Image (tube, rainbow, N blue to C red; front, side, top):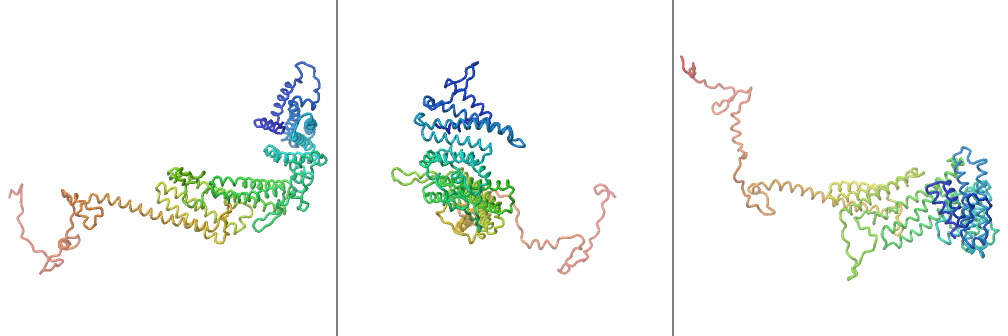
Amino acid sequence: MDITSFVVRGRDQALLYGDFSTYHGQLSKRLLNSRKKLGIVTKNRGKFRKPEQVTAEDVQGNNEHVHLLLLTSERAWAQAMSIKAGHANDQKGVAGRARSHIVSRLEKAARSAEHFVSILSQTDVTGATTTDVLEARAYASLIRGAMQFEKQSWEPCLRSYATTYIIYNALATASKSDIFKDLLSETVEPSIRFAAYQLKTPRTVSVATLAKNAFPRSDDALVQEINRIDATLLAEANPESKDGIAGSETVPQTLTWRSHQVQIEDAQIATYWSIVGEAKERLSQTVAKSQDKGLHEVAAAYDEILISTQDAVDATKQAIDELKGDGVGQSDPRMQRLQITRTAVNYEMISWRIGRNRVLTGPHDGATEEYELRRRGKKKDAASGEAKKERELPTGKKLAKLKEKAALYDGILQNLESIRELPGVAADEELATRVEAYENYFIALKHLAVARSHAIIGNSANALALINGALGFSLKAVAKLPNAQPTSDEAPLSLDISPASVKFLEQVIDGELQRHRAIVHVDNLRKKKTKVDEYESNVPLVEKLYEYPVGGADLEHIVEFPPREEVVPIKPIFLDVAWNYIHYPGKEPQVAVGGQAVEGAQEPEEPAQPTKRGWFGFGR
């Protein structure tokens, strides 16, 4: 009959674009259509008569009676939730007549659901399966628990929700459906936790233990059916477990972070932390068998542990918020233990995030220049049976791969920055130094990836500058990570980096630095040779006799013809002779006397010539 899916699907469709009032209106229309199908609707202007109770024989004749009972119960529940939502913003909350109205509507919904259970229990008449009966029983307990929740009857509320919790867990085990898991996580578990809190139950008791203890074992048929599906659901909790944490030997009771070992304050945190340990073991097995798998397949194996660590982080935050709501200060020992737990679970989650990104960067964290991140196996030649040689990627795809690597390194650096902000990390000098070394390591890798992109497009000088900077960061990482513990090659990648990996990166960058220095030097020589060739192409051979013509002499350009005027150097003797005939202002001229130049010597006077007079020398 798919009772649970019928109810959940109707709620989801109505609440997707509306609220509980919208759902209530839709249920009224669906209920009217169901009555029309059964022919029991009151005619227009007809006299109202109370509808008769649905019997097992009616359900045997037409399954629409099942929908009629479910819609009747759901309409009353939707009306109660609509009234509650309308008073949610009241200063005093839901109280007085509003609460009484909500309780009465939920009471009607619970009676209708329980009547539905009593009908389906007659399996020899209705033909219902045991799964149908269990779903109806869980639904009736869910509605009854909601009524007792609003009535603030906490012990009966806990028993009703415990019944729903056990049945839905059994159905989820049998059917592997996510519908039951969603109902448990969104509705049932928070209600059990709140009811237990009102009953002064310690927070360290898990929801599973609470449900086991509160489950009504007086119903032998229900207990027998649950044990048939999953006997562990109603198994007695381990009496030796401290404070009732999770009733199982596999659930940890303490958590170790660095040198601190603290007791786990909340059972939900303990449950999720045990799931993290199981996910870590499965991840290790997957990585050990991932030799023939692509990088994206290995990275997908990290999804489970990332989800489980995120659940542990959320549970820790919720526990801290609950203590703050109760007025517990930061100096309280419980709050101190929760803060250490918060740092530990957040560090674990961030470590696996970084590990997933490291897997996607490729071998050696992307230090080697490899662009073929294959997702499929290599194709083989049909004739020879050997693997075909893969073609080299074009420049555009190489640049795209390097861009992806740079984005992954940015994500890793952001996660490292979030580690610095965790409580207690800044005060731990050894951990802060190690995180700084990791940061320098990934900055060097990012510089190397960007440098390779510059080298691909021909900017060898920019590539050399970036590689030189990367070498500086890698040397810092080597200096700050001398005594780190080596990690196993078969272990899944996480935040921890071995000194061998850092040293390998330094050697790769040093080799790239020497190679790009040579490339830049050759490029500079080529540019210089080009300029010289442009100049010397116009110089005749007679003026280049001091050079050996490597490519052969240009016999067609031996001399410049026709010759052009050029400046010719003069012998120095002529300049020395001219020195004697240079006159400078303020200095008397030198006159040769007896073969020697004497300053201030009087020059011999010349005879005076007659003065010309008149125009053109004519006249008297």
